[in-house]
Image (cartoon, rainbow, N blue to C red):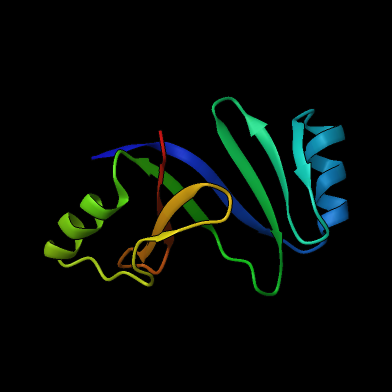
Length: 111
């Protein structure tokens, strides 16, 4: 069963300019910054900034078990872009698109 939204990633034209806006204008607390990505805290949700042209809106949602949710959703006809796989940062993920092409990533964490 789907838990909560963990992370929303949005595309930005200029990462440095976007970081200044979200940090200094909106007053959000920056979590991390890399040359190709930055994250901010908004309550219990992490906002990711990903520079264009490769960026798309992407929503990460937590589930208790990615493999179980993957199987259940596939049986309901959901088209997955990736099978469940372990990530270097400790999560396990599987990606799918909704009927309008919006990307969602199921995420579970080892306990």
